Length: 407
Image 1 (cartoon, one colour):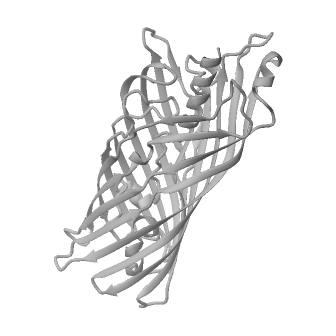
Image 2 (image 1 turned 180 degrees about the horizontal axis):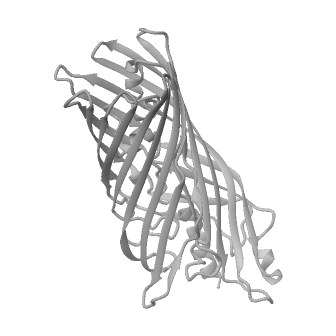
Image 3 (image 1 turned 135 degrees about the vertical axis):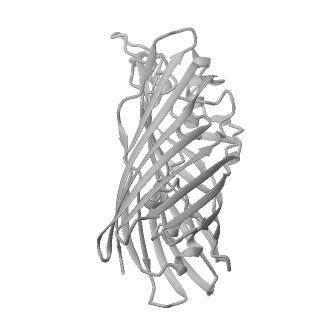
């Protein structure tokens, strides 16, 4: 039993911080065009997509948007025909940007608040993988002040400091039942912070093609003093001292992006982005309890994740001065090695399709809508730590809306 408890507790931090939590919902125009934007001048979302392009924006912006995310995942255990589905909960990734600078100035200031990582899933308390995970709510909110400078009419640079505020709330069952027969439960709940940066460069070529290159750094986020809450039978409570706290680190990976924009006519824009995500930062995770016992030891869990890439395409057609239509799509490779797939991140190679619509409500006010469908490939796995074995299949549906005031 002791070995079993140690094994179960060892997997807890892994589940909180595993791959699969990157959220790429940072601007409705960009979502509609398949998440392209590194080589484009669209709106205030350039603060994130390419801070080097901000100085080239012809106007100032205040804008905000939200993308309710519906995560539909199913699991069938090896040798079974019973299908388990996660609960219908809606995550709410958001983004907000402000860009300001004097007219015809060589510089602009920007501020971005966005959610590049997060996850919300709830498998319930009675499914076959409850000892691996019951529920997870993970959020990372980046705040990025930015400055951008036009070096010449054809090139500009920019960069920003990143402050991350993160929170996690994770529950799982413990195979220790009391007189009622109910399982015990572990809950980890805490907040953390981290720091990083974002920089980019933007070019306008003589042929009219625009090019962008950016790098968002890794953000090591530390959680100190999180609450470790164990609900277990009275006979074993001494092995799970209460109150108890934990500390850990969350290495949110760096992203390097290259993008281009092509403009066949005044109405048409074509865009391509290529992203390289440094998930190999997850070599291992350490998890430190303030109070240890023989059954509750600190943990160290190797991960060995691999770097991943995303390939994105998109286009926009402006039928007149008021309306714009957008479509896009892309492919993303999984960084999660075989044996490390978990219920909160049933990751696999995936593809997605997007569409969007923009409407000028008034001279200085834009309304933008988007919709995305994402298909995560079916993946049969046996997790090397929890021994949960079966096949995951996931689909994601994401509508979105934003308003942008510009002058």
